[in-house]
Image (cartoon, rainbow, N blue to C red; front, side, top):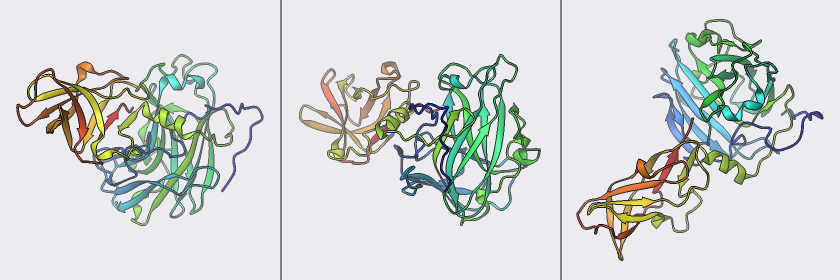
Length: 371
């Protein structure tokens, strides 16, 4: 395992790493998900790390795994090939990626005079020796650059410096909360993405055929595994020592994009966790305000609800038959209103009520504002 260099000209101040959850310590959704590879993928386990898969038969299991390089992290992302794909169609693709808001990238100065280099470093290992691709993909201006890296069966730190991209001198990253840049790890691709000449020397307008030339296929064999942690993206030509971050800081950053209520570690009263208080607005429906969100989200979230719920009122309880669901009129980036329907007309309009888990430790509301 290689060690990071120390750059005497770079400040040791926190915040130089633009990657969120770079040590793979936060996984609000799940620790392990199987059968990934269909329907374009999504966010499954480790927060802020997305699988993007398209057009292929290969499948994988994604896990937050307690296996990291000593002194860097106790955790990593593990990808395990469970279904091989020996016949690669032209449009197939598998990426492990993180996407960044434009307003968090202004320090790079991309697209304008004075644009700076970007250095990406990461710790990686695999079940065998592979060649994969690391790409910076500028969404705002449809430009990209890819560098290849190799794996071994031991943890190795790769340090990759991408050139400054002045472009036309007047096309910066958008200064907003939308997706402006993606850090992509190319793990599998068809000729649509491998049929040209790898664009490695400088950023260029996106030509798909030049994005992943020379990579191996993660889906070549069910024995294949891929491990990643300690990912850092910083301004400048030198990979500095990996920036260690307090878990509370990492969690708060991740919660801008995803919040699970209750958190997985809140198990003392989990079977009857309280999700909100409110009132009955009809004889079959109730409205509830969730507790204040710990972090303001990127935008008004959508909700995915799992488990069994009940409405508690005047010492009695009745099962929720539909919901809870987000009530858009009462929601914003820092407060969420839920609505729920019961299976009878036993509620009294205007009566105060609580929304609870119904003897279900797994009941939860997942709020999503991902890029």
